[in-house]
Image (cartoon, rainbow, N blue to C red):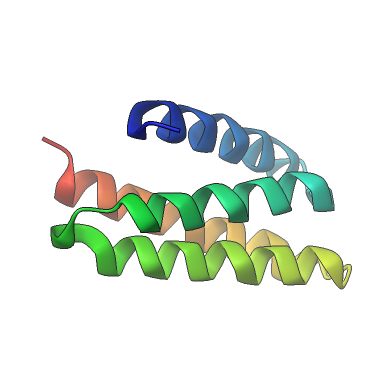
Length: 96
């Protein structure tokens, strides 16, 4: 998957997760798994300048997946908030 398609798919999946958690719901495991896979792919394609942030983001996404698998709604919502903060920081810092 090329970088633009990967980013679009990741953004779409994350928006679905955000919509659920903003309503106080936990994302389903399939959605969390898809997001974790996409963030891992993003990390593999990351430019050296932001590879560390991409790795941290992928780690948070995997933590989200584990929280969802364990049925930990509050942890899942907190992790989504952390992912959103990390995304905002990365976009502010590295977007041209």
